[in-house]
Image (cartoon, rainbow, N blue to C red):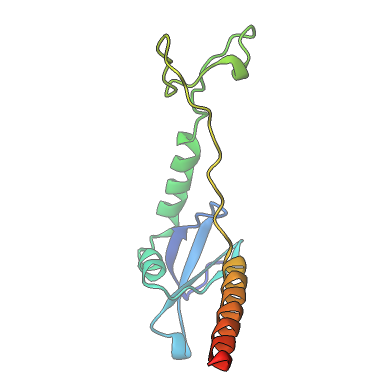
Length: 140
């Protein structure tokens, strides 16, 4: 038995099932919301509302789901012979060295100081500078 309050359906991108779209009530009457096996979808953002307001009849959504299931075939993966393990195959994007060329070693990039370390260093420098100014004034 279908719910008379359902405006239409969309495909849920999470569970790949039809999501029922209903009009909100009360202070949320200007928004639509959805429900599927994932649970309620009460998002009020513009993109989510536009997506849910593009609802369709249940038959069309089921046809979309059927088409999605038949189209998703396994992707062609490169055929590796058993004598060539994956670790021995070089990626095509890696340039081959020229004879006599010196290749620099990959040195790790220097790590930047964390925010906490910077605050600590600043505090110590501030204390030292303050102490130096204080002692300079006392000497005058």
